[in-house]
Length: 329
Image (cartoon, rainbow, N blue to C red; front, side):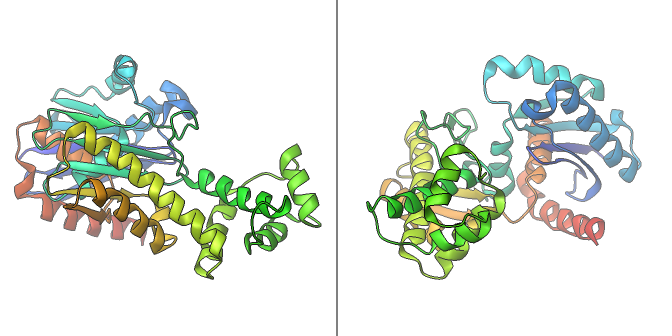
């Protein structure tokens, strides 16, 4: 029996998953953030080792029994960073084929039916990656949600756009919005003058609760909040369009995998995104990722070991869900 290791090292947590060649998930490990930008390469190496050790112990295996490994590593953004990331992997003492990718790419392998297509992340930040059918060509955006790159549709970008609507109300450039009293209550500002001045001077900080508040106000029907959500969907859609153009997928049937909690905030975001994408690629299918992205790491590990993952993908997803349910109960 051959076994395969997948790792998803993200900005908030690191997951390790082991499955056998029939697609049965047999081991799991959990640790803290794995992005070297926040924990350093030593922190990444420690979390990779901790999660892998946990997964091996649960599966009652040794590292030498792993036949293939796939890893999605947050912060692995450029080819020049490959060697540094591989150095962080070396303490695992893997003796099998290995591939590392940006963690956004795992969503394609975990969520796209055919194992290729595009993934678009919208959480605290945003990102987009794509793979051609033969996995020979990769498409991507700059990543990082930078203003200068024109990629801004993560949670704090949505919050900033909402605050712009509040500022427009203050300067009489736009209409009144229910976002204003909601932000006043959340920050404790005395009035709109105090809110705008306080944000400008840094007395009031944006926080994740305010991101969720934007979606709540949109669900209540506020026109300005809804416009913010529509804007975010279009921005995410344009990120996907850029990757579609890079990979010449305009006439293809493929999956666009949506990853991140913000897609649950309001259906308008996905609707706006779909409209933007399908103007470019009418046959693109938007699918929500409903399994842990680390499943994509196992699939990648199987591919590296010349194992056709398609024949066991359904079982891998099913058994991973069961394993996660047992662990989280």
